[in-house]
Length: 213
Image 1 (cartoon, rainbow, N blue to C red):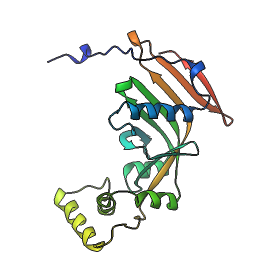
Image 2 (cartoon, rainbow, N blue to C red; image 1 turned 180 degrees about the horizontal axis):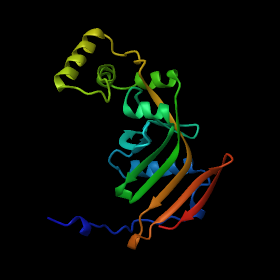
Image 3 (tube, one colour; image 1 turned 45 degrees about the vertical axis):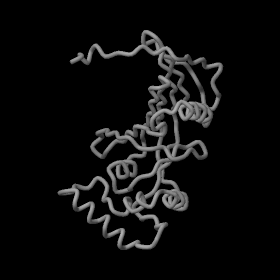
Image 4 (tube, rainbow, N blue to C red; image 1 turned 90 degrees about the horizontal axis):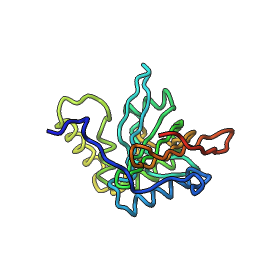
């Protein structure tokens, strides 16, 4: 078995020059995201979302980016989930994208607020019907004695909404938008001398600078 300390990869696919990057990090992210799509990165919209609970303990999980609107990053969840409760209590959060095929990472820090019910319902009803049923069925983050309980709840929801292809949005389900205050673009480079360009928002204006690796 290979020792963990011996696992390493040399990065050499690209470089970052602050002068060639957009002055707007949202536009820069959208450009990188399109490159990730073109490179057929596995789940390019997967991001690790970090939140903080009432005991000041951080937690993180993978969620899916589902939109960029007015400079904010959108994702959806059950408000009764741990992340939903934590964001309601403390809107400060962070999100990280990692695209190993491109040797790139994007790090975001900001605050989260709920999107409108109209926006959330429009997205909810665009999802596959099975996902809509799943959102109605799952008491997300609650303890379940066994999977059969969840499957029974699915059967009940299937019966309740029989014949309906589009379901109403559950009141406990909706979206958050992360309004960024910091966005860092990371490009892997040889010998761990990575390129890091960080944008910070100062009085409503984005400022960019290079960070040491």
